[in-house]
Length: 160
Image 1 (cartoon, helix red, strand yellow):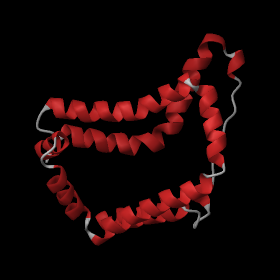
Image 2: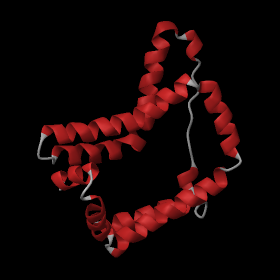
Image 3: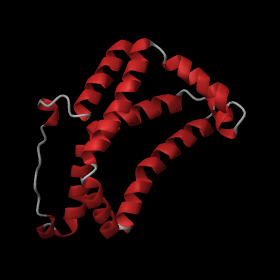
């Protein structure tokens, strides 16, 4: 199973880096004029946003819930879920507060989008190869050895 997921990650990395262009690049959009919806507009758009993000967030949230449910204490599971929620929510809050600055930053980053995609695709491919070769456990053990004497390492050791 790890081999299959490793291959899938490498294929995704090739697509991310621009080496595969096909059905993976298709998207469908639905344009809704929320101005005419009154008080019903924001909740409807929230549901649509959640529906559109389910394929992106669902597998990750499922994995986090699985890991959180396997913790020895409820507190450890809550810490994992809290970290996930903050990692997901804080960027949206920052983007919402500084919307005009965010748009300027996005415009600035647009010219670097290709190198960013290639670099992230390369990192993703390396992770896929690590999974395919079966070295993920070795790296996890190595990380525990390195971080074992830190508060972060104590949390890792308690959860394994």
